[in-house]
Image (spheres, rainbow, N blue to C red):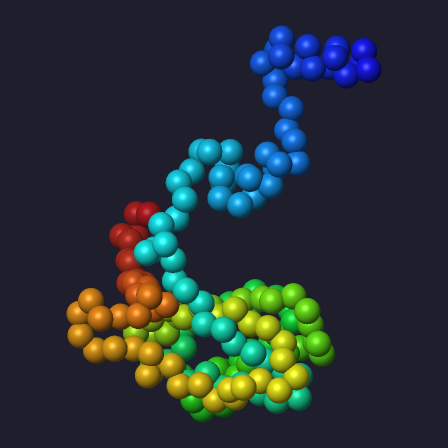
Length: 163
């Protein structure tokens, strides 16, 4: 008991704070980087689509433009561009019955960005998904789960022989 009071007194004397489980939980749910950052506003978040995959069947995602970049959030899923189709991505479970939800991100040549939360389902509801229907023509008429990525094409730079 005396030891506990002594430790508390030393912490107060040196301005140290003890961290309780409640403090740790608060920091992991929004108070990022110990108050040294801002929370991301809801309007800036690209809402992910929900996607179900299985081990025995392939899900095909059909995009409105050629695929430029794909990121798999976990080794529980595999994906690849369909042969001779630049805008079709095949997605499948690499592990049977995986329990943890993971994510998948895709960027297309037109600068569109797509985000998915992926989970395992024995029988996915949708096996072929056309993403073009989710893009609306016109200005300021885009759904909240679509974002534009600005793609910079590298330009060769030639330096004089002196360099």
